Length: 403
Image (spheres, rainbow, N blue to C red):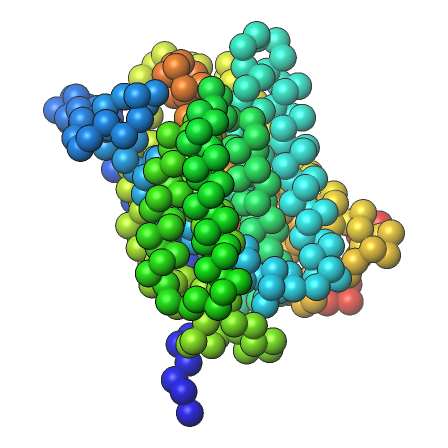
């Protein structure tokens, strides 16, 4: 029999705690280095170190920060795109019955935090561009927290959170493409569309070798960078063209190009790229001025959007859908556990930091304030969600109600 590698999704669910811990360590080191007297300048100089060619006149000289945020994060988004395609064609979101509840939960989980943010920040002009910062869920971090709970978190809850986060990622990519794109270069955009069409043509022609798709991904990334659309969007678009062999009930086929690519790239994304991103983007300077500013409109709006908006939106959508008979609650999970899972959706971190940098590109002080809100909202969501799921009673007939 042909050897079948373990499912990347199962690896993701069982081993993401390690990636989440690396991300926490990287973010902690960034904050430490940014605040120690002997290393603060070294950290700043390292993040803004210029090297390599100037790829785009608009971006200017490439720095370590740009290479990671605009370059390596495209690989992260490639993995996101592969997971989205796999789940929609051959996984937990392959039918509309399975998609309905995660789509409703993710949609409400993006709209409500944005509304909370806008309601909190409307007292200060110039902050509306940050409305999407609390709208995204960090799938690696959230699943990592669930993984730390072991059997106290039902498997159905882990799968449902993954589905919600995947739909959430789709929304985040759409937001980046539609709302954080300025000054389009139409010639580069047309060229990028041509490369994407060629990659789709390779798929339709039955080309299953990965090399042409990887070459196409690099070309698509560069042309997207030149076009003015954020270059990371190229990762998701390229992933949509990678062929997949459908194997209902056993989506682990070793001869599926998408499956092979996912297994190769995912560890690099989870254990190298995301921690690097966390390191160069989490260096918040914790002086008296910044600590006092945590309760100013921008960081407060982000914190409340993530901590309150996410749990209200996600849990409210699930409860309403179940009560209206539109869907069933995740099997084996009581309402308290579902609520704990909704709290974990407030861990924005990677995606929220990413969108925060896009929302205020020429206002570093606002980016720093947004970082503070992201860290505070994500930390509160992680601790509250973990505590509730850690101590909640297992499902029983006495706990299975919400009136």
